[in-house]
Structure formats: C-alpha cells, structure tokens
Length: 282
Image (cartoon, rainbow, N blue to C red):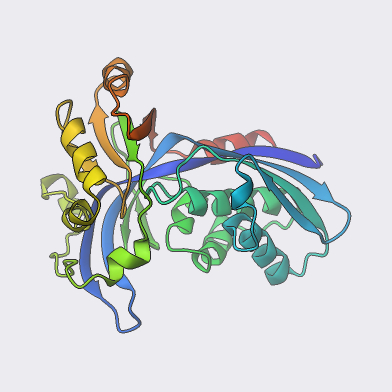
C-alpha cells in the first residue's frame, strides 16, 4: 500500500442555475447542470502514524480549522472510528468565492484520497452522503460525473455533454453565497424542468441579475466576455464563463482579459480527472 497520494480537485461550472422554491428550513430548491472541468487545485496526502491531521497551503490564510479539507478529514475519522491521521498539502489555484466549487471539490478529493490511503473501503455513495454534511456541492465531486442536479444540489443524474472549451474569468470581488440567497430580490419561482427537457429549455442563472446589480465588476466581465461568446455567471459568482468550440478561440479571448480579472481556459469533461487519477493507485 502506498502511504502518499496526490490528486486533483477539479472545478465545476453551473451551466445554468434555476431557483425553483424555498424550503421551510430556509434552503433553496435548485436545478442546475454541474459541468466538471479538467482544471483545479491539487492535494497531496501522506499517512501519519498518529491521529493528527495537518494542513499546509500555498495560500497561508486558508489554513484554518474551518477549512473544508480538515473538516472532511475529521468527519471521515469520526464516522469510521479510524485512529490514524494524515499530512495534507493544498496547492490552491481556484479563486475563493468564485462559484467554481473549489472548497467543495477539495473536500471531496480529501474524502476520496483518505478513504483509499486509510483503506476504509467506503463506497462512493457512502462518501457522497458524508460529503453532503459538508456542503451541497460536495457529492457531485465525489460521484465524479457531469450531472443534472436537483434538490439543494444533492440529487444527481449523470449526463453526457459535448466536451467543449471554456474561458473562465473572475473579477476582483468576493461574493457571499449566503448574502445572495438571503436577498429579498432573488427570484425563487422558476418552473421546474426534467432531465428530458434540458436541451429545449431556456438556460439562465437566476442569481445573475441580482449579483450584477450588487457587484458592477461582475456585470462588466459578463459584458466583456459577450464580445466573444454568450456569457453566463456560475453559481452565485463572481466567476463568469463562455463556451468555445476549440481551445485556440478560448485562449485568444483570454489574452484580452480585463485588468480587473484573472482567468483560465479549461476543457469541460464528463468524467472527473480526480477519479481517473485515483484509479491509477488502485
């Protein structure tokens, strides 16, 4: 058995985000497509002979007790009664507060990696159920397939999409998901669709008009990107994206990125590179 492991933690895009209602507990009912990308963070894991869990990161300010990586590791220890630990290093590339699922993906990769490193033999469904305790976006990264999402994002139907290239641009602002979902002007009554209606539906992000109003740089980024291809915000922002038929077109637009943004080009994939990388160690 290997005592070290390195895995990617990939980003996702919400190709659309429809808010279809609000539950009595305050959570919102959503419908979305989670499109996985071949770009993200990287995590390195080493087994420790004690129950200690340590985290280091190339962005030192992210090393806190509230980091989802540590929360995921502790949850896995607690739920299985496992008595040994791990040293974890996070190489962060995805922007915080961008709507790309970076923290959730880091948590999912941690569950997958430590399940393997510690030889716990939990199945994917068990890991996804644990992940849901950490956040609604975690299960899609555990399951590792582009999917149609419902509920709070935890009911997933795997789908196959053309593997297009995406330019993702993130303006220099940090958006609070909690603030957007609690805002009185957020629409909450979009009609539900089923998976068979996806291609015939009008895709949009119900959060986009509100976020654009509250954060002018998001609106400016959407407007800039619209010069190259139809643009849309992912999640509650701040990142926005456009799809291109080939990489060269996307990279040409990236070269014109506004000074108040940072960005990257990535390929949309149906199968997660995280699971593919993990399979090599099995």
